[in-house]
Image 1 (cartoon, rainbow, N blue to C red):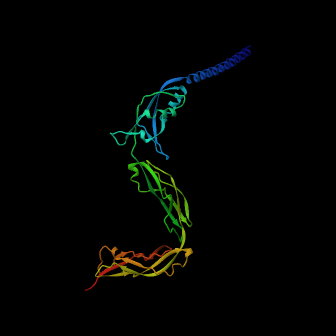
Image 2 (cartoon, rainbow, N blue to C red):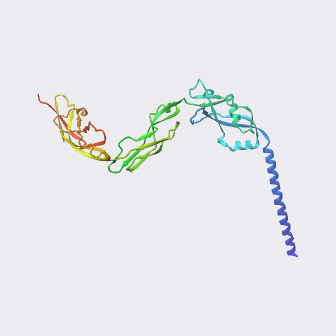
Image 3 (cartoon, rainbow, N blue to C red):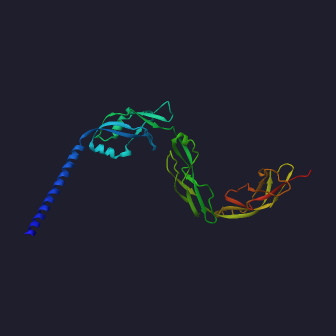
Length: 334
């Protein structure tokens, strides 16, 4: 009898549990239908937005953000009101306007204002078709807009390159384009003489190098493009050596010069493909006395670097051994 009673109790509990579950499901569905119906109704609410202002231009502009908020009284569904509150700090409207609608206030060069009457159509178009604007509570929006400037600035390659033995770069790297257009606040752009690329490091090169490198970004400055092409020539060379007498020029009147050593070895570099082209070249290496601060009397303790003054066409560089010579100036006896 006891077992039979327990079975009846268990069946009752299962039956009641199923009924309770069905009741809760029905309650949830009823609440959902009620919520959808209520959220579909129209309500009066206050919406507030920060306005991002874009000047009309073919190029990409950095927006100016309004200092105060645009307040609107609207008729909106419950769904849109919930979406508005979930947006949090992202409650912003982006408007593209002609600069003529911006008015500079007399009491500040950087302070500008925008009348909301000028943007009513743009704001209504940006909002959902389910949001009806009753009226604008805010009548004026304020912006900090610095005077803008546009100019063309050259690009410089920020690079470090090393070559394998007997390879060299005979010319400066080429950049395409060599300059770009930049624009931004006048006080920032007017200070720019050039722009640099991001760091480029190449090691052990034995061939022509080329590729794309990004331009280093600057805060508050926009670029017409963010990347440039670079090319670095690499050639194999040989060195042609010859002994050359060092000629002294611009000796002060009444003085004589003495060098040690009086000769130097010129190592002239030429492309491997042009081998022996420079073997018969007559070099002229000079030491200019104008480089001496004051005459050095009766001594050979002033060190000066002589230079090659007739670099031949086709040569890609040179060096002197030794690179420095000692010079002494002696006053002539009368």
